[in-house]
Image 1 (tube, helix red, strand yellow):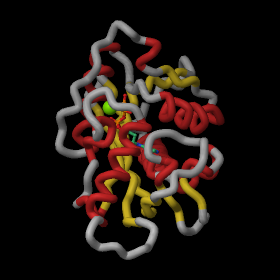
Image 2 (cartoon, protein in one colour):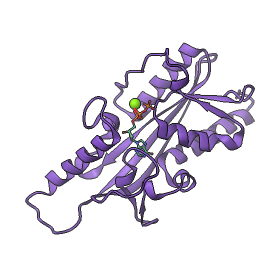
Image 3 (cartoon, protein in one colour):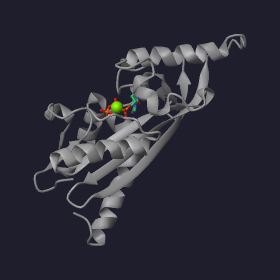
Image 4 (cartoon, protein in one colour):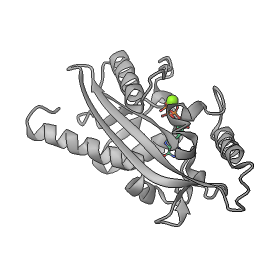
Length: 215
Ligand SMILES: O=c1nc[nH]c2c1ncn2[C@H]1C[C@H](O)[C@@H](COP(=O)(O)OP(=O)(O)OP(=O)(O)O)O1
Ligand SMILES: [Mg+2]
C-alpha cells in the first residue's frame, strides 16, 4: 500500500470487488485504482489450483509490470453438494466470459439435477462457503503478504436482493435471514470472506510495521 501517494492498486477488473475495496480503504485515505486504470496491461491467466496461488500470480505479475505494490483478490464459491465446485472456476462456471447471471443459472441447474429423482418437496438448499484469498506484493523487496477469509451459508433456489455481485443473490446467511445481496456494503464487509481476509491482512501489515520491517 502506497501511503505516500494515497493510492492502492488492486489487480482486478471486477466492479463489485472494486466497490468493496473502495469502501474498505476510503477511511484510511486511500484511493483505489484497478486494472481499468491500466488498460495496456494484459489479463493475468488464472491457472492456479488454489485461490492463494491465483491471488499471488495476479499481484506479482501486475506489481512487477507497474513497479509498485499491488493487492490482488482471488475468490469464489465452494458448494458442498457439488464437491466444492465451482471453486477456483467460479468466474467461468458457465463458460469463458460468462456473466454473473449465467453462472447463477448454471449453479441452480446443477443443484436441480442432483435433486432429480429425490422429490423431497423441500426447497433446494445446500451448504456452501465463499472463500477469498488476498495477496499484497511489493516488487521492490519481493515481499508478499497473504490472508484468507471464508464465510459459511446456504445456496437458496430463490435469488433475492439487488446489492453485491456474483453469487450474492443465491447465498443465504441464516443468521441474517437474508441473502448476501440483501445486505448493505457495511454489513457485507462485516461478515464476508473478503471483509475477513482484509482484516487479517491489515493485522499482518500492522504487525510488520511494529517490527520495523514494514513499508
Ligand atoms: O463477494 C462475493 N459475492 C459474490 N460472488 C463472489 C464474491 N466473491 C467472489 N465471487 C465470485 C464472483 C466470480 O464468479 C468469482 C471470482 O472470480 P475471480 O477470478 O476471483 O474474480 P473476477 O474474475 O471476477 O475478477 P478479477 O480476477 O479481475 O479480480 O467468485
Ligand atoms: Mg478472475
